[in-house]
Length: 192
Image 1 (tube, rainbow, N blue to C red):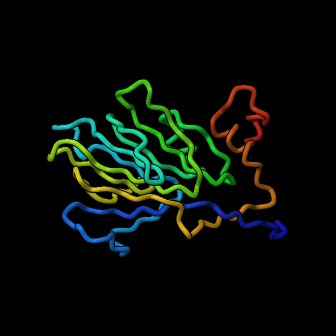
Image 2 (image 1 turned 135 degrees about the vertical axis):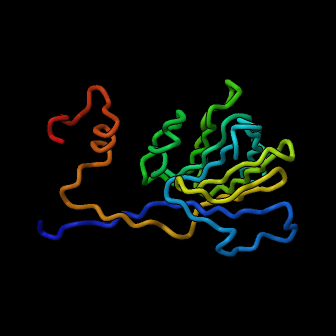
């Protein structure tokens, strides 16, 4: 009404793909680099031959886990209320500087979502049979086809997304409570 608004900065992720066929250092070109506001995720390319995939997770140079299942999601705090949440991942306030790693339908009961510092560097390696290809996705858009031996390096992007917040916008918590229809919501649902 009175042109009152604020600008909020949202963390983004950057991914660089390194294909086995290219043994040189990762070329930082548009064809190999991707940005995401919500998430990057890895899913089996086809359900016909291999309905699952096997992925190795490395964080800051340390091998952390191998996941066999329907895939893996790497999300920002903004993306924590999207696909990551649907897999049982935690909801993070967008002001938190962190990254969420969530397995999609893992074949191990010990696989749990983890939250790591935003300063971390993540490497996801495709492992398994030669024909078990994996599709790399960026904010729900098809990114690239990967195969065993390929890897993806993910870190916090230098770029940030800017979001306009109107003065009459409800708080982050009221928005989450409304959209998720939490029982005992602090807002009156009839106010929608």
